[in-house]
Length: 244
Ligand code: ADP
Figure 1 (cartoon, rainbow, N blue to C red):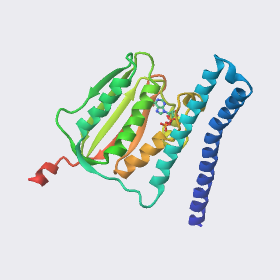
Figure 2 (figure 1 turned 120 degrees about the vertical axis):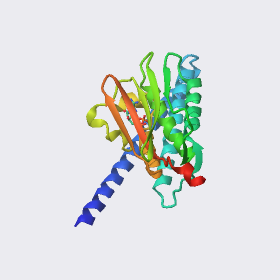
Figure 3 (figure 1 turned 180 degrees about the vertical axis):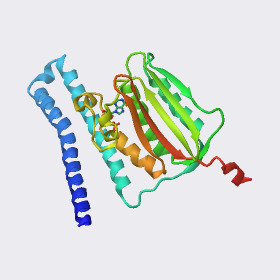
Figure 4 (figure 1 turned 30 degrees about the vertical axis):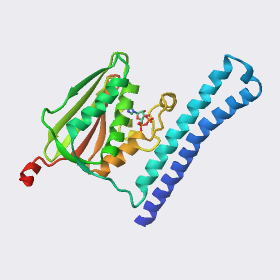
């Protein structure tokens, strides 16, 4: 009996996922269709409207590409032969490099603060996958940051693991939604996040990737004050003894 219920649950989740994907693809497609129709019906001659309408169709195309890329990532992760390619890296340098890249492109009114260990922390990670995870968390923090907001990056060494956190001073996430933001296609405010260009898959992908590293990911938030996304990665502080 237990197996049937479990099977039913998986089937229900699958249906919901397919419905979500279809909906997410239909939205940009119908938008593009109406703008292309308007262009075909004469707006193409209008020097003011034409570039604006083309801009919309271009943005919607970009959104669909992002969505399909995220879906491909998820389907790869769901397949049996999903593997991660770990190498030894100094996490502090790795993290600093990513933050530097965002420092270059962020808007000037947003302030970055780093609270990182002075010494190197050697751990085994899949650099490519963790870069995607951290990119997504920082992009969200920037998207939701208010004018003059501060984004704080922290790395703490704990027993057997490191804890990484990225905090913003944005509008926050209601308590009852905190766990759900890691579900596929879950968004606190659908209209708002769609406007901001999100696919609703970023944190679901992050959760899978952190899980594949043997870590955990979760969120803390106070509405109106800000959000912190935290994740852990296994770390053996004794490893240097092993090498000697
Ligand atoms: P999206 O592509 O929509 O950003 P994510 O999976 O990255 O998808 O995030 C899921 C949802 O979690 C977002 O739509 C948003 O509602 C909420 N969220 C994520 N990060 C933050 C943050 N830093 N501040 C407020 N809300 C956030």
